[in-house]
Structure formats: C-alpha cells, structure tokens
Image (tube, rainbow, N blue to C red; front, side, top):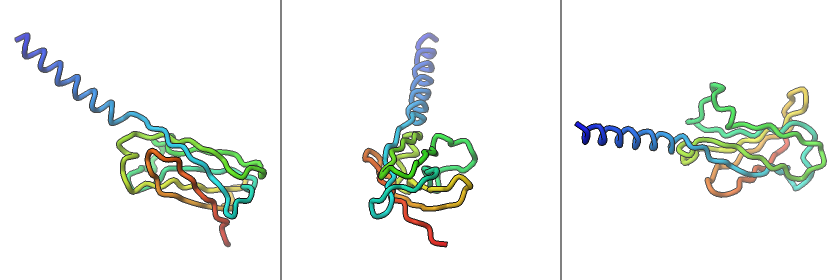
Length: 128
C-alpha cells in the first residue's frame, strides 16, 4: 500500500513538473528600426507575436507590447514573453505597427521569429 502511494505521488509530481515546464515563459528581445535607417516617426509602436497558433482572444497580452516613439530614435528595443512550447513553433512572426495618436497606421513591418536570437523588425512606410 505504501509503495503504491509513493508511485502515485511520484507520477503526479512528474505530470505537474512537465506541465509547469511547458508553461514556463520565455522572453523575446529585439528592436524596431525604420526603413533607410532614418529616425522612427513620432507615434506608438505596437509589437506583437502573431501566427496561427496565437489566439487573439485577449488572453495573451504578454504577446504584445506598446512603445512610444518621440520621432528622434533610430531604433527602439522591445521585449515580449510567451510560453516556451509556443515559441518553439516555426510559423511565428514578430509584427510591428507604427500608429499616430489617432490610430492612423504610418508604417508596418514583420520578421520571422528565430528563438535564441535578437529579432530586428524594419518598419516600412504605408502607402495609401
């Protein structure tokens, strides 16, 4: 009876440890630059992790960050976090959108996510 309890306790602990490892968060770091190396225009840079496995249901606010641009910086650093098992997928992108204060889209860019390396996203001016 005692051996059975020990085996069950060990099995439960292994399952909990595996689930916890799958849910561990991994930080992604990178920077956003503007096309041609010029200063990023004034506005809000919205950086997000996108792909078919990322649910847009509002539960993944950690997969998005907003950074202000004062119009003078040539590069803006960002950091995102997400579960290690999701980030291991090969179909994810980092998408950056530069918007004015009124929400008007000024520039957009994306880059394929490569875990373990710094991501650089180049913003390209949007043509209307």
